[in-house]
Image 1 (cartoon, each protein chain N blue to C red):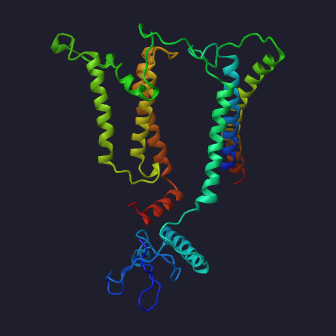
Image 2: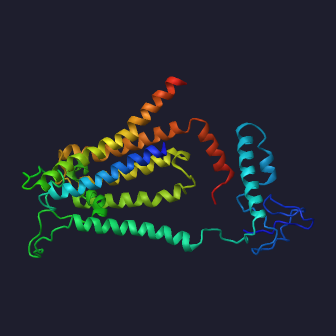
Amino acid sequence: MADEFIKGLGLFAGAGLAWMVLAGWYRTPSFESPKQLIAAPPEPNTVFDAVGIFLNDVFFWTAILGALTFWVLIPALNQVRESSTA
Amino acid sequence: MTDDTTNTDGEPQTDGGSGPDGSEADQTVRSDGGTGIVAPDDETPTWRERKERTEGLSRLTYEYFERARSEDESLRRESDYVERDVLAFPTWPHETVRNLALTSFFVGMIIFLSATLPPHIGAPANPNSTPAIILPDWYLYWSFGLLKLGPLNPELAILGGQKLMADRTYGVLANGVIVGAITVVPFINKGSARRPVEQPFWAAVGMFGVTLAFTLSMLSVKNLMPMNVHLLFDLTFLAPPVVGAITYAVLKTMREGYMYDLNRRYYRLRPPK
């Protein structure tokens, strides 16, 4: 159980950090605006920008789905398996 | 407390240190070797307390701790370790390496964030004009939120629909009420529980306070919150009792079961000072 917890936490924190940095680059028009990290991304001018904007979403969903997988999904599956065998 | 654990006939004495005649006059403090038998401290139950635990879970718990204690004692007896008053890890290398690892992590995180997300420096502040949004430091938001309790200030019919005091006075008094409540808490519960499940009610009170601080902080920045202001105001005072009730229910549920009973035995074996 503790192993699953730290896996989920590692995914959540690591992917969340990468998401926060990329969202700070591409989805924050100003650090004084009320819409930070969630503004619409600009049209990419270079390949690097396109990759960054794409990875931004990838890291976001990695953080969400990774935590859900290890904190909810896998423990629930284990519970179901235990209850069916016992 | 480092008692001498041998009395005159050389028998190890583990019941808390009183002599055969009940006196403690022959107790001397010694911390330099000797028999190597680990000294029982104030938290060690007496033999009479141990013998009262003769059946069931209490017996099991007693055996568990007695075995752990005797194993610990025999380990120390075999070793040439000098008994000291303070047992801890040595500063070098154990503590130092661990602290260096922690320090490196946080310094690296600061460098990483300052390199990847450098905040742009805005125009210099104009001291001649008050900004549209003024806020205290974030850790005082809860107090700032208490200044915005105008809708709670009653319009008294006996005064012809007038308010007893101005809204700003009401907000300042609300600060006094909150600070007073926090001041009173240590006097009515000294906090002897070692984990929230021991005292679900007080854990619920704590969660109520934490949630109230958070929702009041959200209320203080209501013009920046992307939600209806009236809904936000209602949630500010509805969410804390709900969270407190959920905490109480969850902890009460956790009290059921074998592990909690075992932990409670452990808790009673070693009462807090």
